[in-house]
Length: 417
Image (cartoon, rainbow, N blue to C red; front, side, top):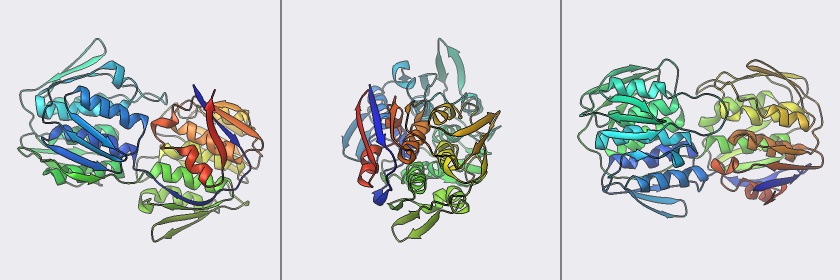
């Protein structure tokens, strides 16, 4: 097992390029199941999760070829409707094959999903929506058994905003007969990117980026060439890393409009964030102000940036309150930050951070993907040496993060635990 060792106290400076968005790449790769012929996807990050999806698509009968950040997929030979436990248990996004399999084969057998231990993320909204499209569903021995002679359009309302639920239903509905309306739909940039890819394949989807999405079913889709959007969470992680080290870095290839909520909070905290022609420049300050944050569905503050911003609040002046409204277990990184000297008190869904303290290096353990990033950021800001174990979590969502930070002047490296 590997760990990342960080010698803190070094200012980050220079230029870093953001990779393709994991949370956009996964559903877009899966959307290839809806077509015959070769799809070509560019700017796909090389991550544990994208490698898992490629293996899963291969198991389902698709041909998959990879070269660097380019992935080619041909699902003309799709002949298997089962997504097995061994693959799905490691990554929740695998459940997104449900919609395309039902649209193409009329049947799917998908293991109940796994992923990070950040709280219950039930897929009942996916299943209820599929039932409204005419799918018969049962749960047997840890698997979702689903079949339908044909899919028909429906008016579907999500009780709560669900990104993967919106994506799954959207992919199922593009080949359904009639019109499907998704109400209280997710508005994330990754959802918009998937709809854009599907529309280029020949789907008829409108209203994306709003709470009401309308899908008019078509007979068939065609393969495409598509460029995956940049990863807004990776960009945000570098923004906070610059801020916490009083650094000055340029983030190339990001989309500033995808990170408006985070940019607003950083500027409120006294950090300089300026848009340049090819990205963003972030300049830190030693006079960081505490700010209150509440996570919300997009375009609100992203839950995937909550842990990273909490590190910044640990070294900011004053008191901050961070409220988590998306996942109930997303404060499990707090105990590790406390080991590094952070003053944080958790009460229910809120964490009170008393800033102005100097973090000190310590051995810490990552518990999920974004917690991993927060602990690395904390190590960069800390006095002394920090060792972050269980870094396989970070490999699910960040491409070579320790190498990118080292090129910015961070003193960190990967080694055997």
